[in-house]
Length: 186
Image (cartoon, rainbow, N blue to C red; front, side):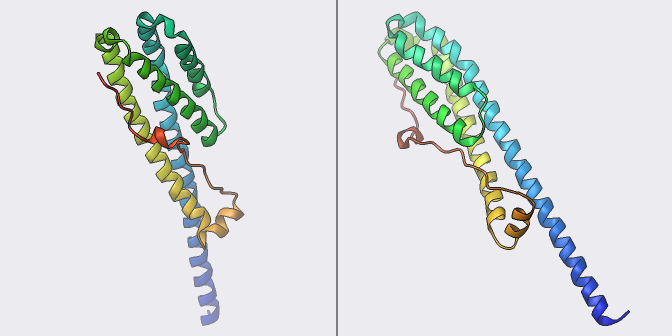
């Protein structure tokens, strides 16, 4: 075999290895993003299941704050609906978190409610759930960052566009105030 043919075959083989490795890496990253999104969805469903219990507890003490509670229920329904993507989910979750904060403001006006064992247990569980949601969001956004970097940087962007890999959307909070930890005074 001539040296030129051997070199061409070697280069072709290395190119084939690079294409295969890059493609497989893109597939892995895309699957990580899907898995992470599923994790966020699971944590949000957990939150959505806790809210009816909180609403019932608050209703017992704050019957005249019906509007706030109804807004929370409506926001929960929108947030727990099936979403087409991260942007839609983030929009509905932002509205839901805002409604949830209003319930805690109502609760602050009722000392008996703040001291109720059931309310305190639900509040602790919600805080735990919010921590889990934030952790899931960070994990999702880190995977989105990794995928987007591979889709946008040279030379992997050449394969990404050839095989239809696309950027993913981050889950972001719209309201700067919602990024702060909610203050609940007992």
